[in-house]
Structures are given as structure tokens and as C-alpha cells.
Amino acid sequence: MIKPKAFIFDLDGTLVDALPDIQANANRALASLGYDLRLSLADTQPHVGGGAHKLASNVLGLPMEHAETMALYHAFADIYEQHPADHSKPFPGVMLVLDTLKARGIPCSVVTAKPARARVKVLDALGLTAYLTLALSPEDGFAKKPAPDMLFECCRAMGVEPSETVMVGDTRFDVEAGFNAGCHTVAFAEHGYQDLPQEFVGRVVPLPLFTDLLKLIDA
Image (cartoon, rainbow, N blue to C red; front, side, top):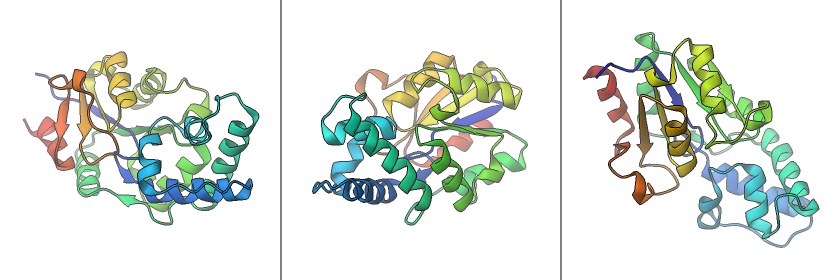
């Protein structure tokens, strides 16, 4: 098999353990709008991966287009920009993988459902920006995962084909986006916030350790 020439990563749950900040910022947003509801980490975890708009809809139990959903979404995005990484940190093995890929001249990008302004702040705060050719969110004008649009744009920026690229994520949205783009390999970070859907078992590369990714370039 031809070795991959580039990597695309999801952000929350894949590169970064952001759950405590997502919980804290969601609760700040709820409080700012006068809601009594507060989320625990366990309450928050199932909502990670689909984007802040979907999180707001799910938390309130209201349609995506509802005025209260939109108000919570915008409050969450604004507050996240002010508290991008109070508690977030890269998962174990992430920095070793990124350092190794950079040393070998293998380009990397990020595609995330996180609001664009928060994404920039998080990547900068955690020292990840310098490793990336490109980072994209739906707010940059692209369809959300599982649509492959952001992956295609990252491949274009990195100068590679999707068939030469590994997609790494921790949700159904990431896996499906990788398949929809025709990626060389789709890998699943087991340290993330969702279990691998049964229908993808045997079709993706499981990563019990994030550093297992390096086997793809060392094989």
C-alpha cells in the first residue's frame, strides 16, 4: 500500500480534550440567557462533534432554526472566544505525532465543527497552529461534516489528493466525512467522546493509542 502523504484531524475529542471547556462555556451561555439548566460533563459529552448549533438545539430540545436555539448558539460562540482553553489540553501522544509528522515534512490540517473564532483561539492557545497548513470550520463557508467539502479544501491547500490523505476523528461525522472524501485511510481515536459505530468496525483503523498513527508512515 502507498504510504499516506498528509493527515487531516478533527479537533475536539481527537487532538484536544475540550470537554471541560465545552461544558463550562455552555453553562455560561445558559446562565447569560437566564436558563436554570446546567450541564454536567456526562450531559455534555453526547453533544460534542456535531457543532455548537446542534449542541444548542439538543440542549434546549428545540429545532435548529428556533429563535432560542439561535440565541444560545450565538451566546456560546461569543463566550467560547473569551474562554477558549481554560481547561483544554492535547490528548496523550498528540504532540509526539504532530512533531514527528512535521519533522518528516508531512502536512497536516484540521476540520472541526467548532465555531471558527473559538477554533483559532484554541489552536493558538495550545500551540497547535504552527503544525497546520489549514484549519477550517463550517463558518468559513463549507458544509458541515459528514460532507467532504472541508476535507477537499484542506487537500487542495496541502497539495495532495484525498486518496493520499488520512482522516482522523472520533465521531460518526468524522468517519463518514473521510469515506465521503475518498481518503486513503480513516482512523478512529478511541480516546474521544463517542464509540465507533458498529457498521464501521473493520473499515477504519482503530487507535487505542494516538501514537499508533505513526505505524501508517513507518510501515
